[in-house]
Image (cartoon, rainbow, N blue to C red; front, side, top):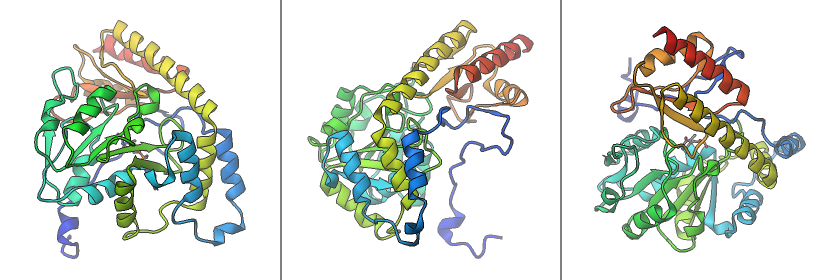
Length: 354
Ligand SMILES: *Cc1c(COP(=O)(O)O)cnc(C)c1O
């Protein structure tokens, strides 16, 4: 069947995204989407942008959006790159900063797209084992390497590294690029953006998908020294000049301008997360300390797969991986308080039955 495929296409093992069900009634706690709507300012900006200018190509340099980002994060526009979701930004980072002959490093338990990109671009990688508490150990990231990728907070564990930890990795790797994927940073971790001016080897990647409730708009960013941003632009402009459409550009600006809404919704999610963690612990779950909008939890008496299937039958989707070390864990996205009530009731029933 695959004779007409390129060798590269035949050898790929693509990323498998969490299920996006057609049935609306399901409680969806499986892909770390935000349970609250996007900012009204984002939606108004998108509506306003839906006009006859869609006839024209969008700004390939995304200048206006980069200006708003520069203002929001206290950087210069030449320290900012934007892309079609942070997945695209990460893919461009792998192409712009890593070479096949130099082994890159990332944790063994982390965002599974990293191995997919490394394989796609023919990069060698070493997966550094998390310690027994699922923390990212720093020493192995100081050994010789051709680049480092760290999600902070990490996914799917939710554990965050301190800024001094990130700094140690940056200082130990002056000759390689360190990519810090901050998809969940607004839910409680300290951002490394403040280090961008000091470390020419740092790239911070963020997204509007999680804390800004705009997973459907596909907007992500990279913050780095202008030298690294130039490399990203070079790769991007060898691939697609117009990665962000006019509606996405407008919506992203609207979302970034509404800082109050971000703070209010992120605080609400953190509050729900912490109370849900307590309820799960009271049911006997071991729950990893989360700085993200999800919990990573394991029950000593009931297999995670059993709970996954039982929840699904009750109309609740969560995420589970059949992978070493984490196959007895569920990753549960934080929804509304009502959704978490439903989750806790369902889990209590399933634990009783098992
Ligand atoms: C969700 C997620 C992303 C991707 O986000 P998009 O901007 O929607 O592409 C990147 N990294 C991690 C760790 C994520 O969990």
